Image 1 (cartoon, rainbow, N blue to C red):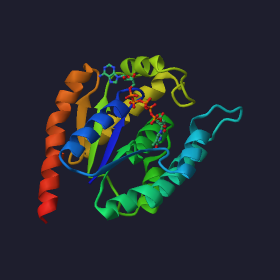
Image 2 (cartoon, rainbow, N blue to C red; image 1 turned 45 degrees about the vertical axis):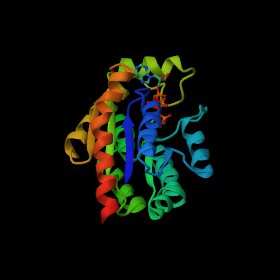
Image 3 (cartoon, helix red, strand yellow; image 1 turned 90 degrees about the vertical axis):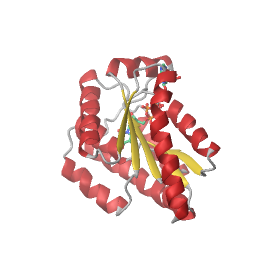
Length: 211
Ligand code: T5A
């Protein structure tokens, strides 16, 4: 299975990915955890280009193309080989983040993103996407406690409102694969609300093992 984890800044994706991976590994499901942008040495270099501060502004199209350049490398080097081995892949952000940030946030057209998605990914799409949703103020205050903010984290509040609204729209549009979790709750409650989703994944594992 290809599982993607999405949501705004600081909503708890990394914290809960570790929890999900532990639960799956307890059920003898071999999974790798990876992230975007990044996931291979070259793709991590592209992440640095994207998130670090520079004097020259990054044009919106450049940002979009760098996201997909990183993704192409990540798919070829990590995601496809893992899926071909039969491992599960849990990816911290994937193309829904591009629709949310470069589409919803920057205002780039959905058609442009969809073209790149098709070109770079061909048939590869997530089986399940968990969306951690929380008001912007909650995520930003958690992200702020962690230290200095990166180039994208320093965007204005309206940018993140657009990102959040786009994620919620995607969750409604792709309700077959999206599972939305209220990430504004305490960690204990968030993890309790992950339980039925993890149970669904374990069930899928049993079904797939039999076929
Ligand atoms: N991007 C990415 C694009 O623009 N387009 C794309 O196509 C892609 C793939 C990547 C940036 O790139 C952009 C989006 C991003 O701006 P990132 O590091 O992946 O950056 O994204 P971040 O959202 O910045 O990830 P973070 O690691 O900052 O946030 P997480 O993983 O959501 O949050 P986490 O788990 O680190 O938690 C943050 C803090 O909150 C605490 C944790 O302990 C931690 O201290 N916490 C809670 N506290 C209270 N209650 C809870 N329920 C809590 N859950 C976590």
